[in-house]
Amino acid sequence: MILVTGGTGLVGAHLLFKLLNKNQPVRAIYRTEKKFETVKRIFNYYSKTPDVLFDKIEWIKADLNDIPALTEAFKDINYVYHCAAFVSFEPNKFELLRKTNIEGTANIVNLCLANTVKKLCYVSSIAAIGTPAVKTKTITEANDWNVEFDNSVYAITKYGAELEVWRGTQEGLDAVIVNPGVIIGPGIWNYGSGSLITMVNKGMRYYTTGATGYVDVNDVVNCMLLLLQSDIVNQRFILVSQNLSFKHFIYKTAEYLKVTAPKKEATSIILAIGWRLDWLLHKLTGSRRKLSKQTAYSALSISNYSNSKIKTALNYRFKTVDLSLKDTVGYFKNDNKQ
Image 1 (cartoon, one colour):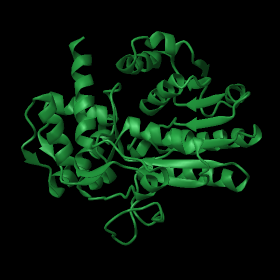
Image 2 (cartoon, helix red, strand yellow; image 1 turned 45 degrees about the horizontal axis):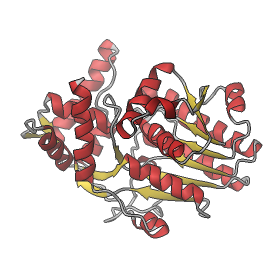
Image 3 (cartoon, one colour; image 1 turned 90 degrees about the vertical axis):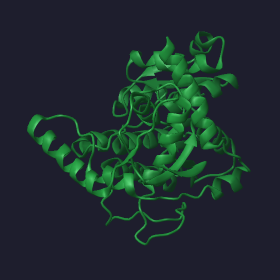
């Protein structure tokens, strides 16, 4: 039996679809029934019988810090894909991020050890690799976490979660970690890359000049499946198809949406003023943070990630970002017609 945490998320839902198509017995953790519609919508993209597949999943309602519920979910489990996480870059959300990402992952690792799980695959992020202390042309899995850098609260907690996985490997657990870049894929349009597509569709005034790594959601899932089936243990892998500028991403998205791309560049001065005003508004009104100091910096920074390790290990070929965007925008258009 295979356990998937975060089964109602973008990666989790795509992973469930592929596992079910391989006739694998699957149990998945969820927090709210409302998210089931997301899973069914994603299944519907790829199958004519999404409900039939959905009904094969054994769902367990559990929070990552609900030990009794998790204990029940781990019964007769051989393999675990830990996809669940809380994603936020708001500094005031640090405690919730820590509770979910670090403590929650520690619970998953402990239960893997207690139940003699054969192998764990943990979905981390390139954010957990951090920014090298010395500027390098390409960031690899060998880069050390830079404790002196002003890392985002999300990055800090994903790095902390990885430490829990590595602790598990020292205690006898076989595990692999994947560090995806910005994940492109259909089905969720209110956060992640999906929210960027939504924003571009509504009309954006500014673009930024930073750059990062991108990857298609199905490439992430394919690599996870191959890694768990392989003899590879206790290693991490960057999952990135290409490194592209944010401007390229926004302009390509606008092209496929057939909408006007933003014409103005968000300079360092504009962003510096922006995150300070955002902080002030939050303090005065209690509104959610939309732009932090760290995200403003990230919007301008250029980070290039190497995918050589995973390509060599699995002889894997990634889908191009442009094709991934084109396909994802197509699903977005169809969803918005309904």
